[in-house]
Amino acid sequence: MLARNTYLEVNLKQIQNNVSKIIKRYPNYKYYIGVVKADCYGQGPIEPVKAIINGGCNYLAVATFDEALRIREEIKDIPILCLGVIPAEYIKECIINNISVTINSMEYLQELENKECKGLKVHLKINTGMNRLGIENCEDVDRALKMIEQREMNLEGIYTHLYDAENKDVYEKQISRFKNAIQKIDLNKIKIIHVSASEGLTNYEKLDFVNACRLGIIMYGFTNYKSLELESTVKLISEVEQIHKLNEGDTVGYGGTYKAKTNGEKIAVIPIGYADGIIRKNKGRDVYINNKRYEIVGNICMDMLFVKVDDDVKLHDKVLILKDNKHIEEVAEHLDTIPYEVLCSIGKRVPRIYKWLNLNR
Image (cartoon, rainbow, N blue to C red; front, top):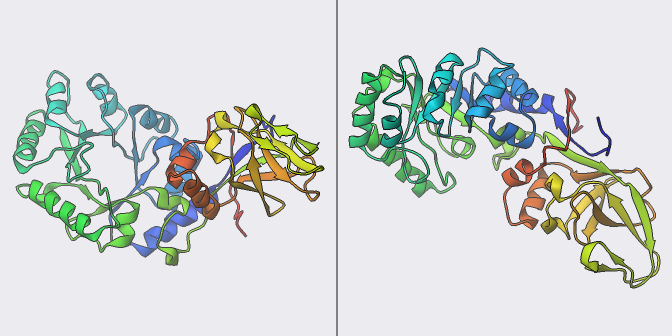
């Protein structure tokens, strides 16, 4: 139901095509792990996942146990890794639902001591400098392996996370720390070894001991590696709900922070606001109406915002709050953030409309 004519249009065909292009360019991995956490970076919990699988991903990764269960309700067969920490009381459900668990610390392994873990699939995470999750040194890795074996868990994978994949020195330091931590492990016995996510994949050659990669925001067309020719997958769309014609000195919105400079200025009211993820810092950046740029003015409200327009704009004209990836990157710069946050901030009450069309032609 589009009671506000405000929605996120998701191009499933382009998601699928992007994934296929990435895999074609980097064909030497056995496992392509689609990172579908946070509802596929704000694009939706299920339909984009199906497009990602159709594109060629043969493994999924999420951040939380709830996300894994939501996918498992509709997609039964594909393996799922939870990158975050799953509370010990849900381990039995992980076994039942074929959800792989990240072992992030010795303390977490100790929490599992009183749980039935036989057959539980686990991935051992190594902290190589991110200092978020992971076991840090060779000795603890060795202890962890012994505990995993004693508890009859299935050590399915080992991985780390690159925190600055654009910096070659940092990258090489992290790889060195990873190799050092796993030096006593017979890697031939490990089914899945993954290091690189989107940036690491495009910036460096495949490591000979790695057989998997994680695809994240690159699946939605965000990459510095332009030769991949990936395309945008989302548009955030609303409409002109009302147009005001102001006199000089008239104000707009809470606090009257915008004041008309001349008689006859036109202000369009758009039914989307900070409750939908368009936070007040968006003031001053542009939206698109009839392929023309117009500025957001005044304080953004919870449910509406204001755009300074001209005579070309009419009632019910479509408004592109987010037009394409280039625009999303521009908005991220305006907000002093990154495209990830712009996408993930789009509120739950904004409907996701899915189309199997090439919307960018």
